[in-house]
Length: 509
Image (cartoon, rainbow, N blue to C red; front, side):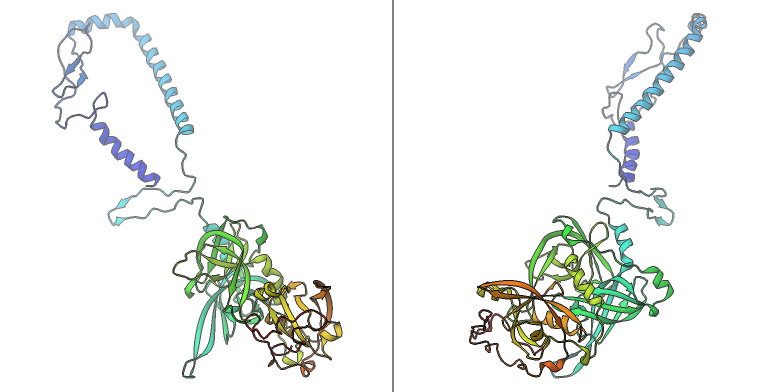
């Protein structure tokens, strides 16, 4: 019950209670009393006397004085009238001071009132029916002001693609996702989302806070990190829309603590932006995305939250109580035995990848750069089984390729590209092929030295696809390294005829 209802109940109940209690505070009989003031002759000296009533209660009665007594009383009181008036004034002042003191004390020591804004109760009811009360209380869990400030940076994403039925017929499909604005640069509005939201899309439409829409193109994607940056031309936006949208404030996910409040905003089920609130349940959760038995499987380190994340929330923002984006909503654990387990990509891990994706150019095939190698992903399972670093094992090196010229050898393991960790061959291929041929990049490799793998940075100038002609076409299983000897760089984890660890070898790149 809110404060108004309590007050109303006090007002109504108080009057009823006062009508049904006696002098001593006990309940009276419901029988009405004809006259509560009883006049009866008596002696003046006796003064007011208690008189028993029919309900066994005592009431003070007034005594009606006789005329001669009244005259005698006037004569006696004529000299003390001033004293009576002075005494009355003093009594009134003292009573007033006591009253204000009581109010002050109860105001300090009484129940603490709500600090929220409460609307007026009047009018509670009109001739036309019930009337809603304006205003409302904002408790400590209220996040409306945060949402209001952040919502202009959140967008809804709709993608259309083509699917093929079981009978080979093609038909259009539509999917929904979310994203948030991270930068306005060179007449482009750059928006971050999940790779799986826009992967394979024929067209992408972005809806802003004012419900206006614009077409978007993919700027760059990283399938392994499940990140993508899409671009909207600023010239395609209305003037009003430019004034309504904002760039999101990015936070450091390293500062996140388990148990702190988290706010998820996204295009849940494609219905438009909605808000869910929960807490950070855990940090650094290793979540395997994919089949788990092939190279398409990928282990990601994510934030866990119990804020509801539903289809369409993917790519949306996970916020802290300051309105900073601390994660990118990506995955939900779906099981009949599980509730409230969702995952988000930590913002601190995503920022370096996003910076790279924002600077990518859309390259033609003849402009793309290549390392000139073939390789296989060293998964966590392979790493544990054979003691190799997680990364990409180099199975073969082209004699005319960029890697050979930079000193990279067969058996080396790629662990980073330009300082960013890589964990799958698809991730390395994506980074390299989206860089123009002739560009110098930094490749971090782990090389076996006296039975121990040590990392070193190698500068590589990428070459064109012509250097791939002499490489294997991907049909081999990686046993060309000398039956597991791995040349002079240690054993080949894929030379034992066991494909359950690494997955398929991809085409040269």
